[in-house]
Amino acid sequence: MELIGLYPTWYEPGVGSGWVVAIIATIHVLASHTSVGAALFFTYLSTKAYREDRPELLDYVKKYGLFLLVFAYVLGSITGPGIWYSTTVASPRGISALIHTFVWKWATEWVFFVIEVVGVYMIVYLVGKVDKRTHMIISWVFGLASYTTMLIILGILSFMMWPGQEEFFQTGGYLNGFYGENTFAHLAMRTAFMFTMTAVVGGIVAAGIKDAAFKKEMARKLAILGIVSTLVGLAFYPWYLGTIPETAKLVMENRLPGYFGPALVGVMGAILAYFIATLIQPRILVTGLAGTMAVLILVFGLWPEETARESIRKPYVAGQYVYSNQVIARDVPGMGVKSEIPLLEKHGMLKTMPLLPDNLREVSETNQVHAGEAVALTMCSNCHSLSNSGIRPLKNYIGTTDVALIETYLKGALATGNTLYMPRIPLQDDEAGALAEYLAVLSEGGPAAVAEAKAQEREKQRQLAQSGDKLVFAADSEQEVK
Image (tube, rainbow, N blue to C red):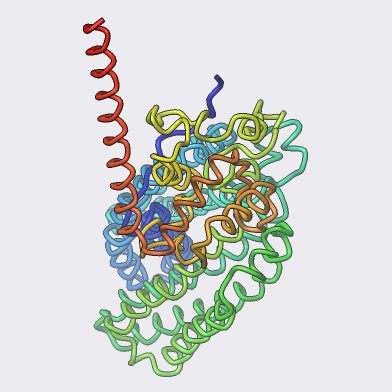
């Protein structure tokens, strides 16, 4: 029988694979966005320093650059491969879709990233060691290469929401997948907010400046940069929302918590208040305050924003054809991709899932909870934790222990895809019954109750096996008597 090409499921009982990816990615976004914004900021300061003969600006560039080498480039270089590893095991087919579509685009990004990494060392360590013109050229190459890496990555991130052009599904082609309204709106909004991060992190370095007059000047430059970039980013936000697909808008309206919008406005208001305060009174800019603001942006700004962006593209994880549970949801002739939904409709998940124990291929009275858990791990755990904690615990979404009621939902809304947020899962009747049994036990007592139910199933199997042995022994004895 044909199998669907699913990889082994990576499941973290405490938090779920989604949170592991989110934590790594959020830290990486802070580091990477700060580094790109700082690269362009360095280009501006270096140009100004050489044109106006102001060596103190170069000294600030050097100090900020040294800070970035640890904060952004070391931290970013650790979390970058961390994203690759965690997303590859959490969403292998999502990453595969991106690589098969943008492999050369990604290779191009790596070329510019190498230039960026070499450039940050050169701009820091060659201050005063090469002539002014050479150092200024290095600054410009560094800044433009750094921004190019963002431009490329943002096109790929926008594809994860939806392909830029509808033609992509029929003809393929990375240009059709890369360029779209969302790409440019996304790039504009992130460009603005990356300068906000640059201004906040730059304040950590500016706080240590000894010259009071120069510290005042830099504090005000950073404050103006932060105020303008934050306001511009907020102005671009409606444009970005206008370019996302209708499904994403529905998810935003129905699935994001009611406090998300007000909380976002509150965070932006707090950031603006911080910049206005440092603009009016630069002396309040101290390392502790600037560092605290960087952490607050990470926890209350980036984390919710990245989580929301990940949420609103559901039920897909890439290109609106790879479901979040890795099942291929639609034909994409341009990429030679075929939907796996018909195969699941015909044979079910347990019979077509590779790397599944043979004793779970068929549902029986002695393995219902085991089989239901296998379905949940494969189809649900990418978005839901099966424990009492972590990302969207599945227990919290059930609300009943009535097996028949749960099974009706599974065979109705979930099987037809009429759920708005979750992938379509066309389960066979026995699979729906097994999953309903597992969800009812999970809802009633959590993972402990599931463990107890599985132990009872094992005991039933053992008793059946023993009964079978006795029957065989009795038959053999009877044959000997004859």
